[in-house]
Amino acid sequence: MHATDLVWANSFKEALSQAQAEKKSLMVLITTKTCRWCRKLEAETLTDETVISRLNKDYISVHLTRGVDEYPHYLSAPGVPASYFLDRTGQPIIKRVMGYWNAEDYMSFLDDVDYKLGKKKY
Picture 1 (tube, helix red, strand yellow):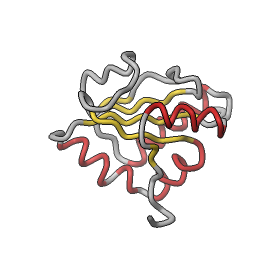
Picture 2 (cartoon, helix red, strand yellow):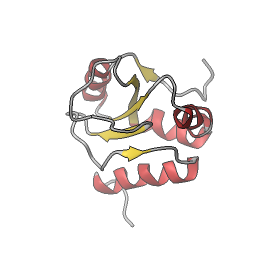
Picture 3 (tube, one colour):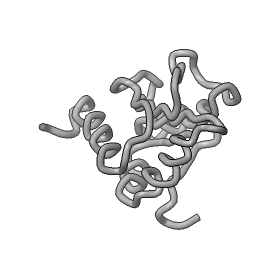
């Protein structure tokens, strides 16, 4: 692993436990094996050093496959990719983020989370 790799938990349950222990929020990414927009998000946005740095610092991240991995029913992911930003109890902080977003736009969602948590002012 490089210093600039995104750190992923192995399961939702592990991510939730780790988030509680480290007092961090969760970023849950739900994809499918055949989704080209999922691959684009993974290859472009989630390899951006700024995005990686922010996620690794403030979040416990977990990458789940719809229909394969176990996760709470309220993370329904009607479309993929679906990014959820949850507090350490597993409750949504902002509405799910659907689809592919470039790094700059993805960072704006992280800013929205910070705003909702009172960490950032607009």
